[in-house]
Image 1 (tube, rainbow, N blue to C red):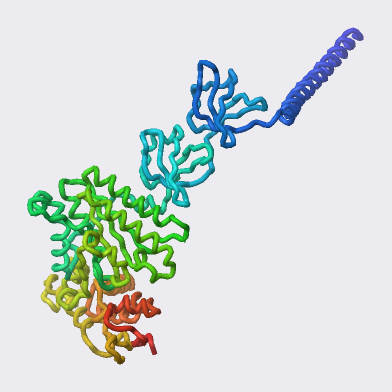
Image 2: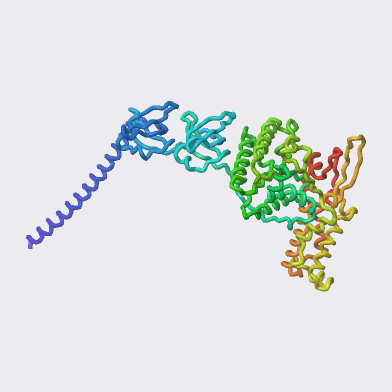
Length: 521
């Protein structure tokens, strides 16, 4: 009995000792791991600093590499742990305190930004620095197959003479996206004569170059569309691009640039963007693709030198764009279209023959032209008020035509309801005069589209409220009245220049403008 008890006691002691031994082993293992970590940290702290150098080329047979460090080229030995054949030109390598290359690192991520002027072979590039100086640099490995083009921005190490990264400038890249606008000539109403001039000036040389060569004619490089805002200048430019895209099925590059958006306060930035735009146009044209470069609000970008707020900017921009326009002479696939509300403010050098040598005025629509425009927006297939349909015997075409005439009558009537502005002008010959402008004097294609849109919205709201819905005479008349009071162009103009742009006068100076109508009381 006692012998069994002793055996059981010994067994319990054995188990206890084994547990203690396990805990001790675990503690020792933990202590060893921590000791190793501390030794590593101590080694890291005590390790001499390493120098980053730019890799240039390798000499595998001698286990040496050429690097640039602090602007100085030197040949250093490479550690056996470093595979020199895997290094890429422009990559960083680490040098220990004895100047031995011991490890590869990443590519640089910061440096000076320059613009590409020209590619020299596959491994070099000519760039322009901020000061305008030209420098020849070598391309780092990743850039040698990066499809660089003139106008691109590169990050460079000027001291090492290496370009190692391409920077995507979104503000420019978004301009360089090829597209085929979905606007056709059939979508544009009331501008048949102007469209015919545009087609004669642009499309005929594109489509029949051999005839132009036979007659010794040189096609125009570009045209200027000028006239009041909202008159259809942008639509015509898009229709040109759409039409040219059908020539041989080639996709059109339509580069749309708004003058104010291209202006940049940084020295040389606007010129860089202009170069990038034309470089991309040349590249696409060389592939036999039609290219339309559309400059909207040209007066903001190409203002007569010495007349703007910042004449220094204008002095640099205008010569740059002149050089680019002159540079497209040999490319038959590039056409430049400019649009402006103030053609008198554009530098004359831009408009001389050999540049934008065709000038087409886009006037505000008269009543007949306005009805043509409305026919694109107020069509017979739209929901029409049942009462209106009944009045025209269910004839949808006749109903739509009647509604269009109602809009025209309301817009082009000259009464107190359509009077919007009273202007006082000083004339060049001397004296002043006062006249009243009505909606008819300020009507544009954009305004006509807005009127129909307002009436459509009112019809939807009526239907949602349980009414019959559909377009009718009352909703269209109400839309005309609202447009007269709330037209963005009329209410937005506040300066003499803005009023001149809106009204379109060139023979007099606007002294004062008084708004008329319900909103002015």
